[in-house]
Amino acid sequence: MSSRPEVSVSPLRAKIQHASDPALQRLSRFPVAAMVAIVLVLVIAGAVLGGVLGALMILVVAGFAGWLAYLAWPRLETPERLMRLAPIALLLAVALVAGVSHQLLV
Image (cartoon, rainbow, N blue to C red):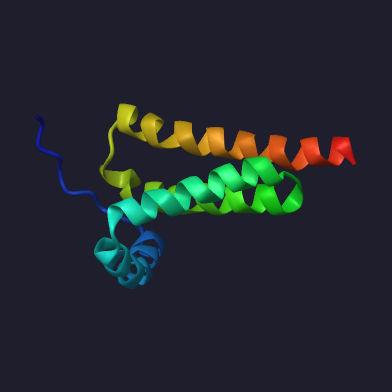
């Protein structure tokens, strides 16, 4: 494995990372299985419910994943960045389909 150099960050990124620290500390104490269950429930319920509510449920998960990806971004290499972007793009597409498909059925 290659050692990664120190990454310099902008003042805005440093401020966001610092503001995220308390939430990350709470999340680190949360059981992993419970976090996975919450994410699965939100995505599956959002896809099944459809409409605006379903799309919002899925967008919450996409936003959470995006926030975590943003925090890790400077330390990631290109393949790792792509692996973080792919599920976020998939969640956004599912949210769009869930929101639009309900509108077409009504």
